[in-house]
Length: 111
Image 1 (cartoon, one colour):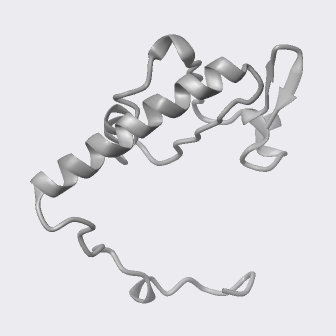
Image 2: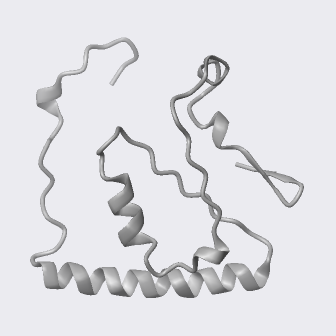
Image 3: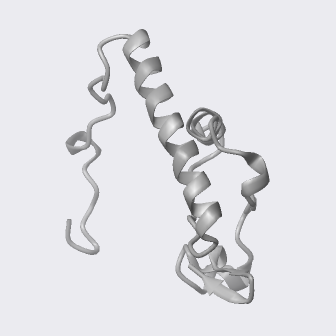
């Protein structure tokens, strides 16, 4: 899409084809991925070198809480930091939308 062009909503799908054939298949896939996330969290914690930044952005009632609850269900909360961002201030609107997600972690700027 070129800048300044009108968006034609009819060109964008509003219904996505299901990823799994059944809820049972979905739950099994989720369980496998949660186990893998848990294992990876242990590796990241042990290395004490890298961090992972997840940004969930969307409108109110857009499903962010449910997605976080499901996807992060295998993560140890003691190894996480959570920051909630409300409506951007006038100063924040002067920057790109990820500007306010820059945090200082152990004296280093993390993007």
